[in-house]
Length: 299
Ligand code: CP
Image 1 (spheres, protein in one colour):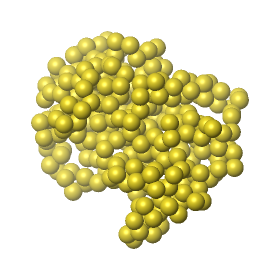
Image 2 (cartoon, rainbow, N blue to C red; image 1 turned 180 degrees about the vertical axis):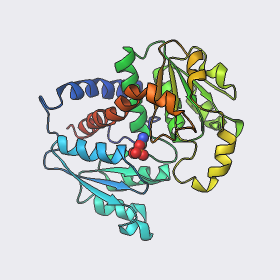
Image 3 (cartoon, helix red, strand yellow; image 1 turned 90 degrees about the vertical axis):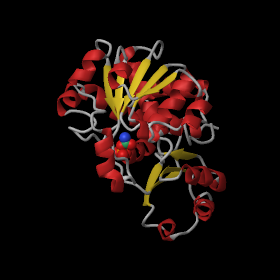
Image 4 (cartoon, rainbow, N blue to C red; image 1 turned 30 degrees about the vertical axis):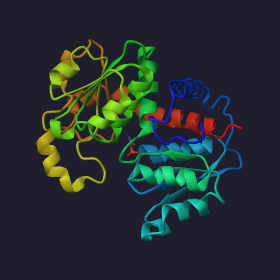
């Protein structure tokens, strides 16, 4: 693995290798911490806000012996129009790796190509691979395995998180049901390309029935703020609440990639009842990303 640009580009074996190494890294944190990034400097270049991703990468890079350098895309010449390929060719000569949060998937792909250094997608409009790897690890940790798994995604089925879920389901062979209004369903060509056991429906209750995991994300993704009123009107009702939890499998996990908007995609009551799972999921961003960093820098 040279880069982590998408779940689509990972094989089943690569995903499982990341999850297995994550378990070792998490168990050994503070006990036997390897330093594969010793002497390295990694850019964390973000064009969008972040709490979890920024903090977990800064901490993770330090714990692996490296130095993180946070660069807001608006503070460097990229924000004034310097092409990504020129930025990449400069950074590739000075840095050892880059973690990028931006809009277009093509920008992280181009950065990886022109910089020649390991590049990690920390969220684009098309994918959020680090999040879904942490989610898979959390499900395996809490449930014991990913076998016979049915995940139900509720809400904006067109955004980056469900898109990464689609590729995870296709690669690992679990069942994914996406409950979303017609206007917010994933594109048909993406579903055709991915294959796998994936069902898309407007029927929220049917999608959640017997599911092992109920999962949601915000209704208004970053960069879509001008559509907020329309999205809230369209997505209203596609909410994880106690009524929906009641139709899922008894003991089903409720997950949220955060930040959460209580009263919109999830109720306060349901979030608080499942806070242990949701914040374990957030913590696992650190462990899974350390595994990715270690794998990208192995000889
Ligand atoms: N889930 C997630 O990526 O959180 P941040 O936007 O806070 O990084």
